[in-house]
Amino acid sequence: MVEANHPLKPEQVPAGVNLVSPERDPSKRISEDSPALSVMTDLRIISPFKILGSASLEAVNEKMIACGVRLLFVSNVQGQLTGLITSNDILGEKPMLFSTQNGCSRTDIEAKDLMTPISKLEAIPLEEIEKANVADVVAALEESRRHHLLVLQHNDGRNCVRGLISITQVAHQLGKEITPSQRANSFAQLNRALG
Image (cartoon, rainbow, N blue to C red; front, side, top):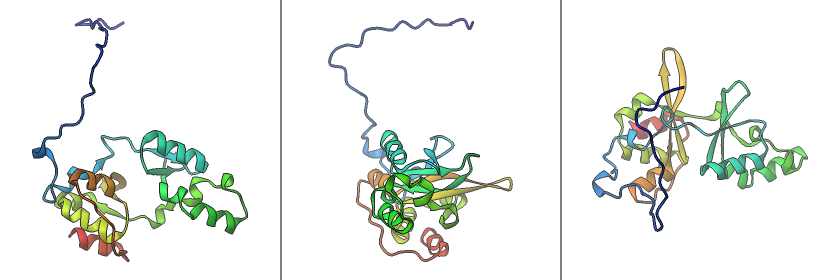
């Protein structure tokens, strides 16, 4: 058994106690000139929320609500990324269209049926994000009409998703509304928006 250096003694929580909130110091607020890394969720620090491709839509929705997110990474049983599923995928018209096209009920639909498969995902290399600022990220999000950007790290011959940038989070941190506009037709257009 480990011996304690300094025994901790719990005390009664006093009535009228408040919760500490994040600092609202304006000097700590990000601006469009801030480094792009300041708006990236670094998956080395924050664990990504994942779900199996075989999960039901109900399970996907419940996990999103429990985790307070609108996007889940979809993986196979080996833990490899197979796609992404968003709240728009499960709450929009996609489930109804899938049911109609496949002659099944909503309860038969699994995450893998509605996710955006990895073959259709695009990501910005971490090296580009390290050179960019928040204005570059906002431009890329607006141009791509996407609500999320993945950040890809090339590490010793292996590729991994290192981060995620959410349009909702960036807008919140900037204190302004960001609306995706025209649709990017290629990864090259996304890269130009960052470049």
